[in-house]
Length: 176
Image (cartoon, rainbow, N blue to C red; front, side, top):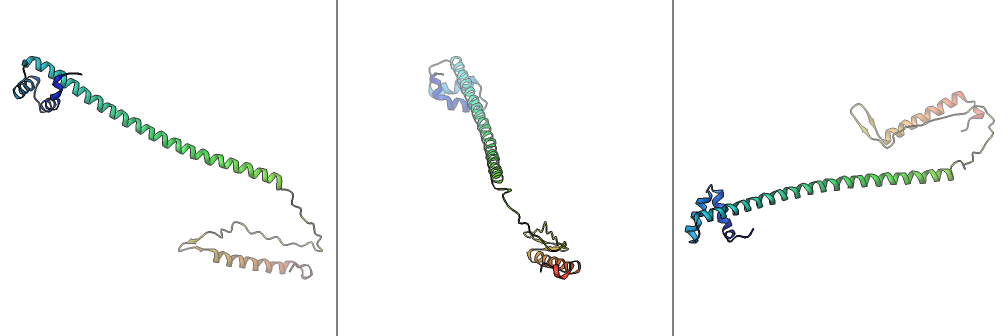
């Protein structure tokens, strides 16, 4: 919009925001700046200026709101894409890792040879140790467990195995 009255836009908007109507604003500007124009003509021009400036403010505010909304969605999409990429990278790494393990197992497993030894006895000792949780630490009022306690329990177990083997296996066939 081109208008010589845009030079007074700050004053026009201030008066308009203070509740002055177009005729009052026109009269004020004519008196202050000694403008050679009728009140009615200036009133029409001031109305155009006010509508232009207010519409311009609304458009700017709307554009700012849209820009903020756009940025928010871009940020959310960026975060979602990053999360997806990281998950995909982990999955791809696991697939490659599993593929290599399978290749290695196919190439290397079942090549071990067990030696067959003949024993003079039919007696045998089978001892199994499983799920020892050596790396765990438990400190409760009713229960304590750490590597030292696990070591003592394993020692006690070995003693019991030896004791039972002495009872059930005859002396000449004992492995120790």
